[in-house]
Image (cartoon, rainbow, N blue to C red; front, top):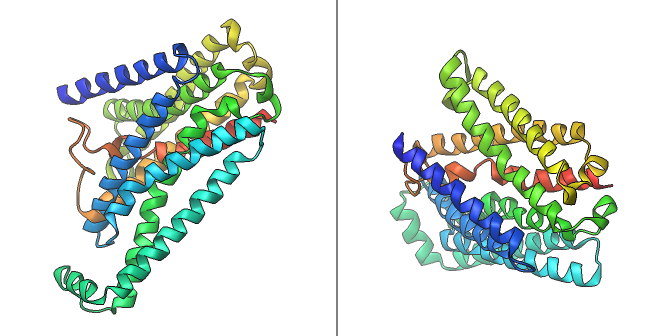
Length: 323
């Protein structure tokens, strides 16, 4: 338990330092968060690759680990281009470019695996795969690699757009500054953090019927309810604090508290589902944790599993309210 507490304190302090840099280091302070997210995505991709392999969903691990850096680069380039040219659709362009590159990379990997017949047969023997052809093995490996590229890298790195959401010249966002991105990014980071913490505390205190015993035996229905209600309460306080700061006065006009709480409520549900999805992956891999990187917590993927889905959701939710 002590290790878990110390690790949690370290994570909070690190995030606080990144927010200080984002707020007080003009022009380029936000890019520390981008680099941080990029590193997390690469590590999480490595852990996901290992989980998939243990579940006999073999993949191209090197491609999966390196590719988040490609996604990060594409996203940042599209942000620079869109901001410089007042292009309203640079997020869409980034998504299309990332998807195109992913498909191209997976296709090349499939062809290389297919054409390297001797090496493929040797790999199949080493993995004790005897009931399929080289072509089917190559196809399944390429498909699993595509899954690895999408989860976690592609989804998680929507955090880059959340980090720079103030640059989107859309609707009500056209008149707000970098302060807005601080508020949105803080919301995106706090929803899964608060949901996970209070779900564990509420479930430990109240107990009761299990939520999904076959998937995650430690999660309870009471914990899930606490994981929804407490974040809504605490983030409503965060909203009220920010809305009373002069530079965030636009919140009450552009984002009324009822709309914000709807975003938070749906976000907590998504966070729970994201955690359950990773539990399914770990169960199929026959492990309890994705790794041992963070003392008391397990692997990095265990900590960011909910953020993989929260990132695109938060971006979409706030943009909808921006119109």
